[in-house]
Length: 269
Image (cartoon, rainbow, N blue to C red; front, top):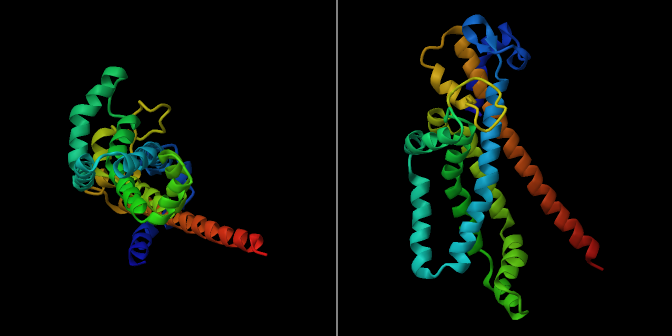
């Protein structure tokens, strides 16, 4: 709460002087010329986050399924340690790898290389351990009697995973998706290094972009006056995105809870 109050108080000067609407209607982002359009960077943030979550979520869940139900113990244990190691690598290391290896590879396919695609792929690698570890923990908490009962009915391994394990662990999987989305929205250094930092709305995945977090990191060191306040206003936008994510998650959780309760009440005599 104190962070929100601080962000709003720092952004108030430019909000009073410029107004909220111009942050989405100005021709471009040029604070020195009095232009404060955040829309291209907002779209860049949303595109990079959405793309990485859509790729990382199924990969992370399937990797947890492999580790928990298919891999032999001699392979599952080092595989799990590898995922944990990936979760602990600093973001600047991911960004450096992406800048040296990933960006040149993309440039061979479609110049210039630094692009939305590079950002999506880097974020995918960074958030994949989050959903993979959450899924693995959720699978561990599935009661063994559920699995034994399903096996006694003659269900195949995949049928048990699809029909028993996934429904029983959906709360943990959903939490993992929320956590990975939050990390993707707030990531700064790796995105700054591989995305090109061009303020534009991308028309393809090969176009350079700049995210809200990268914009704050690039310009805060020399920003003054309304420019500095505008950067805090973009921080307020980021905070609003996180709050919207949390509120949506809470609403969906309650809908599922109350929906399941009402179904049980309806089915009971």
